[in-house]
Picture 1 (cartoon, rainbow, N blue to C red):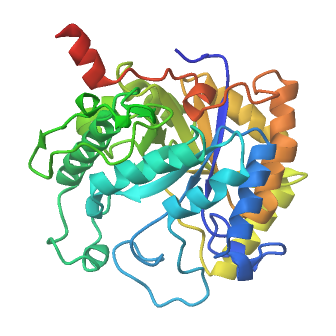
Picture 2 (picture 1 turned 45 degrees about the horizontal axis):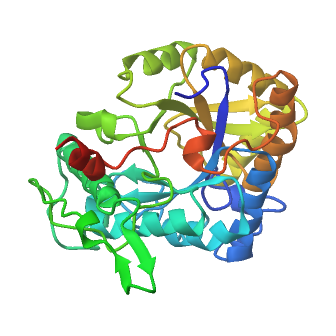
Length: 381
């Protein structure tokens, strides 16, 4: 079980930042947003701040300022690199921080995702995670042409739950000691320790086994926003919630089931940080004017000093939240403010690590390496 006294921090990385006008800010490097160098530098900054992990945002259509259709705007960032491939490119350049790419389960086969994240876990030496998301957008569905939309939210959640179940079974389809690699006998693998998963459901029919051996973590971290796989929340290691204030934070932490349900509950929070509160608010207002409207958000937005943010995080932490995923309004400005000012402030208060104390992402979060379900079943048979 993880240490309930420790505060955990992650950052959500998306282009130049959460605000649509972030790419126009000094230091935003818009010409480099689609380069490995940019992402390597950003993740290196997050790792220097001893953060638990970063998430890489992704989608299956161009970003849009409209909720249910593409827009024709040319004054905001459009386009992304593939999140899983970006994480895999960055993995060898980092040593400690967790790497959690986003995947849209609605249009992505779980077999493909299982081996992609398993590969990321090998490349990162046990620091991979998976952020599962769904999409009910008709214009995303038209890129695939295999189903009709819109679909009921409940149906998408059930499908996502099946998706995660298949992925988890495939990660277990190789026992930990299935690889023999004995040159003298000519045996590379023990076929008896590879298992068919034989999953049959309304959305997927997957026999298995995987083509990739069991990942170093056994089961890489699986994260999702609350409601994404609501029918089977126990499949998720870490849930993101979006409270707007202290009361909502208290309610969000209370409604989620205890173990064996979600082990961690992180609140999402967009942040604009400056030397003083009025400067942070003024910067956010200026960005809103540049964009032509306030930035859309599904979570609370904080504008203030790192010390004030530390106060808020500690207050919300008392509700039962175990951590926070901060969304930098402008990565060039607000990510260094998190790593170089917020983190030292939390360290002075004795609520955040002073060094990386584990080599795996599960270890950083205090989560045990799970036993292989098929090996355990064989032992009890």
